[in-house]
Image (cartoon, rainbow, N blue to C red):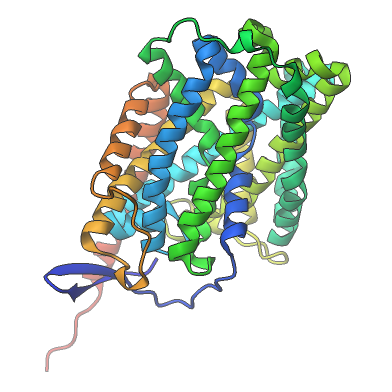
Length: 460
């Protein structure tokens, strides 16, 4: 990352990033960035969460989606303004580092890796559940472990061959995973019963908060896609437009899927027997066994598509941290032929596999939520400081409405959601933060010792 220098604009200092490395080529437009955000956001959650939220809220489940939509909109405003002020690769890491300094930026980068790794593990469990629903022979513990191992090993090998192979594999699944969802809504709407959507009583606020924490997992994605901000054309305008376009489409799709699933299944949507594949259960009602099987295939394609995208991007964080001295140097190895971070890719696959085998989707999703919500909290605080320092004013950045209060309202909502997290999720997250802080301090101390050991200029 480039150092930040301080220049004067009137009475107030403005931080201006100064880079010494060649600039990346800005070739990504609004539609391309919006598609990336949409692709990463729509993964496995929408195939599973309708049942989980129905178990907590019953017919009032759509209310939790709307609460998450409001929270996500406020967070998106903060990300949009920060992204337009700091149009550099790294996304949240770059925004927070510029606003709050290298240590907080480093922690945000670590938390982003943790959240995405836990998300990969959570999605891997859905992949295994969907495969077992289609092929009952894969339902046992042994076959499940074998399936996850083979899938992650295959993705690791593909990405070790080269980034173009991983990118091509991810692109193939982008459209394919949307087809079953759109078909589910279109074919299921005529079978929705209004009585199944009636809300007799409003649920307790605590239940809405707990469901909202879980549902936020379905909206995560922009923080990963925005890591390519340094390659976006006219980022000051493209980033906010892409976020608005992508998240609007995501919200419409999610609410439509929840309403159709609930309108078709009614109270049976909350049945634990449907929790692993609620959309397949609903599709079986209006399209028979073939419809259920198509949804299961859609789940497999969607989860595999998410995994291919994440296996391409996430190991690069391990590689970068190892290269910078925060992790063992072995993880910074580059393949002599394919020029890929093969050691980091292999390590990422092993970590994801171990986590996926140890937990269920809901538990892993909440753990991922804590890490990513802390990243969002950093972005909210960073956006407020970037505005106060007037960073990037020369590029005419996007200015969010009510920008003096929105970051603080968004931060308060994040804290309210985090209050419903489990103790286990907090222990995992804080444990990683402690290890990361130790590594950061050790690196700083080592750098200081090296600086003191260098001989000074000889006396005249």
